[in-house]
Amino acid sequence: QLQLVESGGGLVQPGGSLRLSCAASGFTLGYLRIGWFRQAPGKEREGVSCINSGGGNTNYADSVKGRFTISRDNAKNMVYLQINSLKPEDTAVYHCAVVATTATGCPLDLKTYTSWGQGTQVTVSS
Image (tube, rainbow, N blue to C red):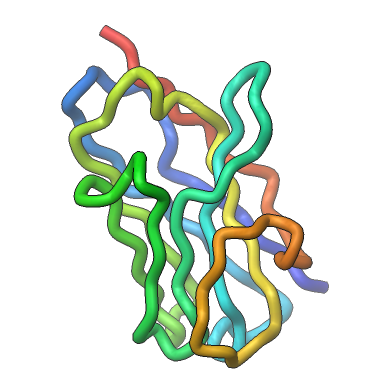
């Protein structure tokens, strides 16, 4: 059974860092595009970053460029999101999601992703 489980969230002060992980089971990540999305209270879910199946193409929302880095380890069936210089507006539940495609593009359109994890809470506060 396909499953995605996020971890690594927590409470961090502004300017701090976290490394989010997404563990996949029941399928092989190698042929999947992977995205990270977040949803803040009272707001719609938004795309944060994605990486294509080959790992050579990434995409970031303007609000996180230069602070977030997505990576994947297909051998371990893991996806990571390194988040630095955290701001209070980064507070949200972060979800990973996948879609089976080998296309080189990497859109942040959440409607194109077919499987989702339950999310991990990131809270940025002093």
